[in-house]
Image (tube, rainbow, N blue to C red):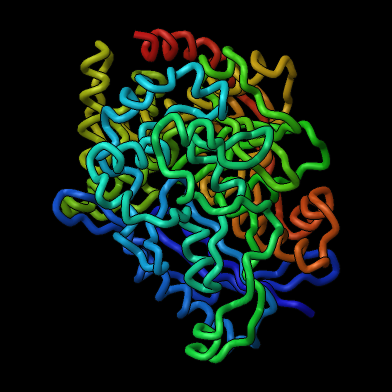
Length: 488
């Protein structure tokens, strides 16, 4: 029986999971968990990449004591990257996407490639920290660093390189860069050339389910492990989660719910029209050459960062308490646009929620529960807004939303989503990303046949919870007030 070692990196933590596949079910065991802590030096926010690679080595060592493994898969967040010189050495620590260095950089890009044209070339949602803007920042402000760069590798590809010595970029993670051709499924070198970026720094693109290479001799000798393959899974964490959507239909809606909420559909072809651009949807790569047509929404970040702020103030409060206090507070008194730039960066989120409400002439929350109620119902209203947009953009009706990931533990948000969107919500699996990661490795090993079987295996391996709308008419009426607020 083959075992898979999966590494799943989120914005605040990572873990190593050891998995087996037996009787059509995936069984997983967490063998190592670690925090993913950013480091600010000289005003720049970095990922502590060497420490994260140390945690990968620790996970490998622990997996060996559990009986070993036959292959490794790695997924991470999108857009960020490492710069390597001609000797394959890191030139600097990768910079965190929440760093402010890209503020104002998009306008410099649009002077060369107008915003609408850029969307028609790659179909990527505008977000100021996309890879394209980070690289343009380097060209404009750190040209000496870019001149020394021989290759850029996105985060999962960087970790795979550290393990194998092979430099390749996987398609789903490349699709987050704003420089991906969603039809050819390769770097868009027209964009690269027009921006004056060096073409040679971009590694070959491979599809999910392809092998990067075997563990290097150096790693095997250091850790005492066999030369097993490192598989390029759908390395963008959302792509892995979507691959694990337990749907028996090709036509479904999903929310991959965590720090970010990724709300969309899976499509055979990208949407590159003006309507999709105006709605600021993105086209990202998925397993089996699919397109994830979706909207990035500032998700549980607002709840997580609010809790961190209260803890910084010496108030220890759990998520269950925050949910309870929100539920006990009067509904529909105020709203925020969760994607407002005011909420992008770390800091005093509760204060910013109040500032937003005051700025927009609404009731200003007075208690912790009222702040949380405002955030929760604003998230659910945003989901409704995007759900309506999907219907308009695709011309299709949907009667179910699959919510995936750790956010399904938040039962209040799941219930609010069903009420706001007026449809069934099916929640699960909690471990969608890591299950998708593992399933793609098994596909590469020949143990799972195709995407349809992946989803069947995931469905067999998890318990799903159903939420049905109970107060849809109330939410529809309140939605009119929400739209007035976010439209100014």
